[in-house]
Image (cartoon, rainbow, N blue to C red; front, side, top):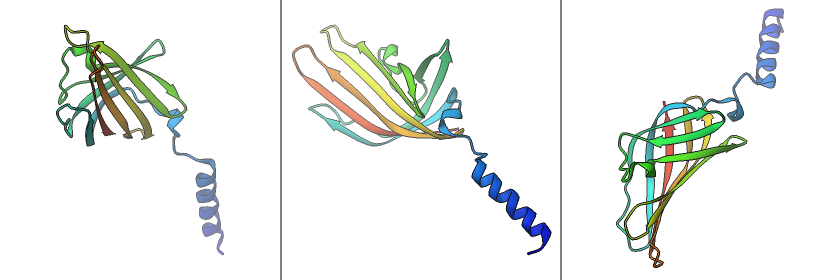
Amino acid sequence: MKRGALVFWSVLSMTLLCGTVATAGDLDPTGVWKVTRSNSKTAGPCPMGGNGSGELRIEEAGGALTLTYGEGMSCRPAEVCRLTGSKTGGTYSFTTTVPVDDEGGKVTNTAVLDFTSATAAAGSGSSKYVHPEGFSCTWTFDIALSR
């Protein structure tokens, strides 16, 4: 093997072995993301949720994470679309529980995301409505983020 080829393969091997690609723990998820909801399902006697797309913003302030759904999402009241979060390894988990009607019904929204690069993440989300008399509905969906 010629010396130039040997140097090339040595550099390539060191690059692959040392890992120049950022790991999920190194990624910064803050900012605006395009979000796509797919594989929507409903449990309970509620109307079917829908697949769709829009945007969301992830912010970090003082170590606290916030995910806010924006354009393309229906948020009544607005607090339903503002979830607080935490990070465990490369997984980010967000949740909120908000009263949504004058009968004491509450909605809990969750999102769990794994960031695979600085421009992509995937995970799942859910919304659960619970009425104080025991009536409930759950909507689940897959989430894909890109930017």
